Structure formats: structure tokens, C-alpha cells
Image (cartoon, rainbow, N blue to C red):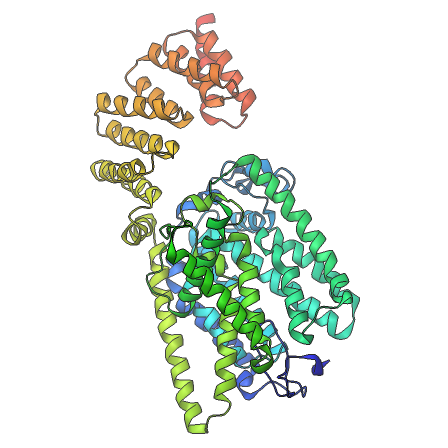
Length: 598
């Protein structure tokens, strides 16, 4: 088996890099992969994770973490059934079928409720587990510098988003099961034990049910087979075929579920999509090598047939691919295999298929959590291969440099983890690096509002509106920001101003949330007839609008029409049995009718 791994034309070792291999002589791993005794080396990796991401343990919930905190199935004992068999119960905040992720949240809620520290600590433990699993995989493949590659993975600031953001756990879980499945498959290929193969398939399913982008695992296995022999055999294809079928089945089901909830359709041509993908590959590779100014939301870049820079990224991508292909007999197949793993693993998020986040940015740090292994291992493997020729004194200098790099990256991760302290630090960081991130202005305004700092909230919403105005085609966001200004104005007691903004928002996009806000303000002003007209019109347009029926009931109650109000509350509860406001108001209406009956 050892003789099938990457060699030069003369039979000399090539650069052993991701996705794997041994030297042609079948030699044991180089001394670089055995820098520490196993237990101490593993503890050192865990310590690197704990220190680098320690500020995350004191972080709160931010942005999409409401998918956890607002999820009713997470809060109830019976919710575990809904998480797995009624995915629509999570649809308000989660558009994918990822039950493994929400099962972990469900379990933790039973242990410590919604105390954020517990969730963050579990994320750190998961990242440590992924790091250890990666190290084990690289050692098994006899990758030079395996521990160093795993250590760089452990502390790299590009991974902060996946580790320090609670909802980023999807990346950690997906990677954990992905690497476990790969290890099981590789062991099966080596010893032919079918039990390992049978175990690898459900591990792959668990990965997909954590985050379906890991559908690329079968392609990664084929890359590994090619790296071994320079070709993919029919037997390899048969062994990988079940993974392809399982991956396609789960992913297509998840995609259909997603499309039913969020049917995103972005008007990019295929030329523009190729340009987006090429630029994204260079963007991720560049940030892996030089991770500075890491933003949560990166600005869009310009694409189009007339953009020379966009074509430059395409040409550069093609040139690198060609260079690695034609030099494979001289430097080995490893570098090309690593690049292929990087590109293939990123492919679901490169813009060839529309997804919701593309409306805000083409790239995100979390997308390369798993894919970055290809670049990290390729570079470390090449460096270790070259360092093997150095003297002992020179090697000590290299070790000092490696330690310095780990310290710098760890410090950057520590700093980056701090932005997740609370929503204020989070949104301020986004706006500082990307002022065009309109929803960050909205989020900052919400934070100010909850602190009772309504003037500052109003200013933040106005900033968001100015950004939204520069994107007039996105009417939802324009109307959204106008409604937010209305809420801040209402909180300041400027009711006429608030009403004007609410009305403008409804003219642009009749969002139910805006209707609720305007109606609630009129309830405060005891303008029950105006509120009744508003909500009756809303439920006429959307008969399944539960809060609309509840609003009709509140207006009727205010007009002392208690029997009609009760009927409206009953309609609302028929549509949404868990609508608390309708339950409370129904009881009030019943009590009032009983009193009248007396």
C-alpha cells in the first residue's frame, strides 16, 4: 500500500500534503510529526484552543443566535421530537433541516438554560475535538509537520466566527463528523474491515444533518484516492458511490426545505458567478496566510464582464491549477490535491447556487473552517519537507519561528473573540469594517433601544436607512429601516412622527411586523377604531395572519365588543395555539363576558 503514494518521476518522495500519503518507502512519520509525546502534544493543542479563544467563554448571544434562544422546541421536553420530525417548528428562525445542531442546543438547555457561557464552552470543547481529530488524521497519513498544521488550525483567527459564535457550532459539528467519517473510510481501505465502512456512512449523515455543505465529502475521498495512485479506479468509485447517494439525498431534501422557506433568486450571470468564485478562492487563501481586518460581514466586490480585476482572479486561478498539474511529477501530487480539497470543500458557498447570505456578502470566515485544512496542510507540509534538510541549529531557529507564529495567531484570535462579548461590540465591529452592512446598523439600534438609549437608537436606524436607500431594489430593507425609525420615534413619544414613518414603511412593503407596531401604538393612544380598520384590512389580505386576528380582538375589546373580540382571539389561537397574547386576551374577554352575564 505504501508504494502507491505520491512520488516524483524518479521515485523520490514528493511533497507529502493534504489529503494524505506516506513516503514511497513506507517510512514512519518524520520526526516533525513526533515533536512531543502523544499525550503532551494533545494537551498542548487543547491548551492553545483554550487560551486563544478564552474571551469567547464570557461572550453573549449575537445576531442569528436568536435561532437558538427563540426556538420553542429547544425550550420544551417534547421539542426533541419536533426538532427531528417537525422541522417546520423551527422555520421562523432556521431555514435548514439541521437536527443534530439543535439536538445539542436542546440538551444544553436542559442543563443550564440559556446561560451563554455553557454554549460557548461547549463550542471550545468541540473545536478542541476537531483539532485533535485533524492531528490524528494527518499523523495517520504521515503528513510532515502534522502537529504544527493542527496547531495552526487550532489558533487561526479565521476560525473565531465558528468557535465564538454560538450558532457557528454547525461548522464544528459538521467538521467533527466529516473528519471522523474520513478516518473510518481510510481505515477501511487499509484493512478491508467492513465495520469501519458501515460506521463511516452514518457519521457522514450526522455531518450533513449538522450542516449540509459537507456534501463534498465523497469528492474529497476521490481526491485522496487520486493522490495515492495518480488515478481513480472503478473499485474506488464503487466504494464512494454510497456516500454520493446519501449526500445527494440528504442535501436535496434540505435544499427543498430551505427553498420553501426562503426562495432566494439573485440575478447573477454564469460569467459573474465564475468571477465571484475565483475571487472568493483567492480571498480565503489570502486571509489564511495574512489574517488581518477580519470582518463579520465583508463588502460585496464588483463583478461583470467588463471588470478586468475580476477576470484577473479567474486567470490567476487557472494559472495556479495548471502549474500544479504540470509540475505534479516534480513536486508530487500533494499540492494539487490540497488545492482541490480547498476548492471542492468551498464549492457549495462559492456562489454557483443562490443562498440567502449572498445578499449581504459573497464570503464569510466560517465557510472555510473545514476547507482551510487543504491550504494549511499544503503549506506546512511543503515547509516541513524543506526544513528536513536543515541543520539542528537551523531547525531550532525554525521552531522559534513556528512558536512566534502560533503566539501571534493566538493573540489575533483572542482579540477577534472579544467582539462577541455582546451585541454592542459585535455590531460596532461590523460597522467599523463595513459601513454598508445595513442590518448591523439595525442591530445596533436595537441594542440601544433595549438599553433605553432611544436617541442613539434613532440615529443608528437613520444610518441604516441611508444605506438601504442606496439599494432601492431591496424594498424590504428600505421598509424595514423606516419601520425601525418609527419604533424609535414612538419610544421617544413622537407619535405623529412615528405614524408617518410606519405609514411610509407600509406603502413600500406591507410587513406584518410593521402593522403590529402601528396597531400597538394606536392601542396605547386608545385609537381603537383606527387599529380595528388596520388589522381587519390585514387579515382580509392574509387570513392566516394569527397576530392580525389577535389585533382585531384587542381593538374590539377596546371598543367594548367583547363577544366579537373573543371570536377573534379564538381564530388567532386556532392558527397559532402558542400565541401568548391571544391566550391572555381571550381570558380577559371571557372574564368580562362572565361579569356582564352576572
